[in-house]
Image 1 (cartoon, rainbow, N blue to C red):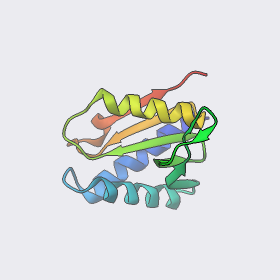
Image 2 (tube, one colour):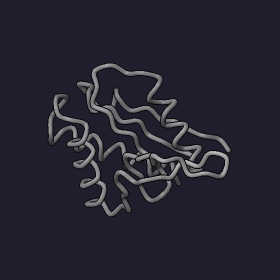
Image 3 (tube, rainbow, N blue to C red):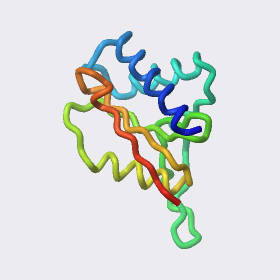
Image 4 (tube, rainbow, N blue to C red):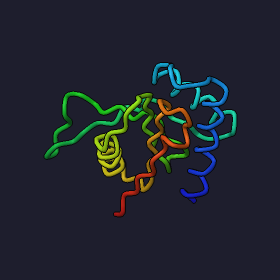
Length: 125
């Protein structure tokens, strides 16, 4: 189910990139446009979802904000940077672990072709 969903999400990201052009805009603009496109396509989308981080039974003062979740099955981290860093993938893997979600997509709109900026991250439980 997650694989089929991720294929549709990638299509939505490509659609946003085609319509807005890119790279060159702020990450927040791409994120908002992608959420809008996913909603148009009928998906349940949550943007900037606040997630409490619990350490040894105590909620840490600062919550974690997840860029996008789609149908509570796929977590997305949106970037708009020229360079890729493995730090982004590690960050996404940590988010997957905290939310107990299997699949994450790192979508970097900073590439000339957004398809070249998409990385799948899978967490096996």
